Image 1 (cartoon, one colour):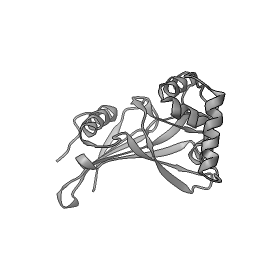
Image 2 (spheres, helix red, strand yellow):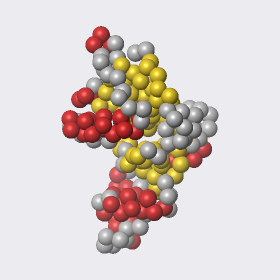
Image 3 (spheres, helix red, strand yellow):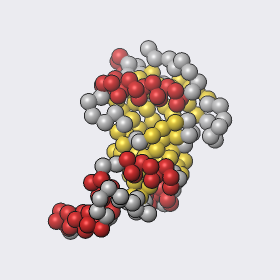
Image 4 (cartoon, helix red, strand yellow):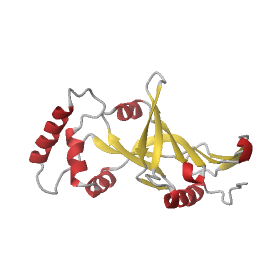
Length: 198
């Protein structure tokens, strides 16, 4: 049986994340990111969490991609982490804002050069004639930005989701799972904790 031993969901997430990092064979920072368009039609995809603290969860993307356009129109998102090895799940939801240029530049510059060149070459989410067209765009960007100094494209940056709800789920025998949801109305308020039926 699982009972949270803290009223700080970020501390609990940090502990669960570190435990998952020791047992997940691939990408313990993988998460489903769900967004919705102006008509409320949802879409979801797997991204990698790149940073988190008490201000929120950070991921990066092309602003001109489907998720980028949807987050610009409807700046609210949901995340879901599933760590099969430890039979746990964490769901997070709240408003999103773009990270600052300095933070985005620092992360972009930490990426391998090929990934930085690829950010210039990819018109993410838009139709692509064929693989050769993509590789030609990569070659063009590679020539345009020789060496290690590949600047961050103006349409590429990060998003920070500031949670208003974080739910922790621990698998239980006979599907009698333990679920706890932390909620608050706005950032900075104390968290309310509820146990939920499985």
